[in-house]
Structure formats: C-alpha cells, structure tokens
Length: 101
Ligand SMILES: [Cu+2]
Image (cartoon, rainbow, N blue to C red; front, top):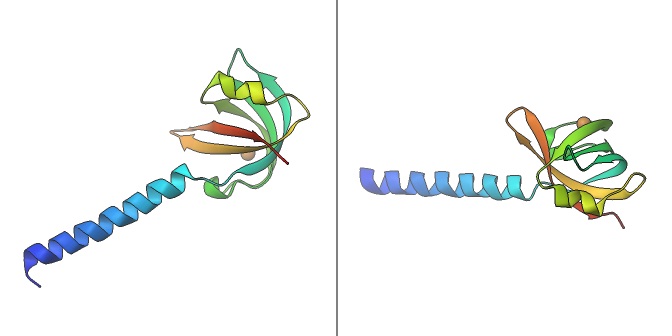
C-alpha cells in the first residue's frame, strides 16, 4: 500500500468514525421523565428525569432550556414523557419531547 492509499484509508476510517459519532449524538437515547413545570415564555421546562445516558447524568429534578417553544405544547405538569437532550456549550437543551406510553 503506498502512502496515498494509506492516507485515503485512514481518512475513510476517520470519516466513518465521526459520522457514526454524529449519528449517535443525534440519536441520543430518549430519557424518561415526569414534567414538574412548564414555562413557555422562558422556553424552559422542569423535569424529574431518570439517568441521561448520553450526558452521563444521574436522575434528578432540574430545569432545561428547550430548543423550540412548540415542544412545550406536548407537555404539562404531571405528564410522563420521554425527551431528548443535548449539551450545547454549557447549557442543556431539550430537542424532543414525546409522551411516554
Ligand atoms: Cu439532570
């Protein structure tokens, strides 16, 4: 294998790995939670959540920012939901909310 082929193969492997990481991040696990409070004006939601595996966070009650205020139409205090959250800089941002079955 010449140097060019080696570089090409290495790049392909790196790209595959980063693509897989991106997909993984985007497909972050849904986490179970119970809604405690919804603040549409501030685009915030208070959740009592279970362990968030993709963020390595244990279960707790905390306030999250939501990406889109429309997500809050799907949740009200007392609801059991599943949600997706990402870390954006120093903030945790909820990107999806689904009713839990
Ligand atoms: Cu938390």
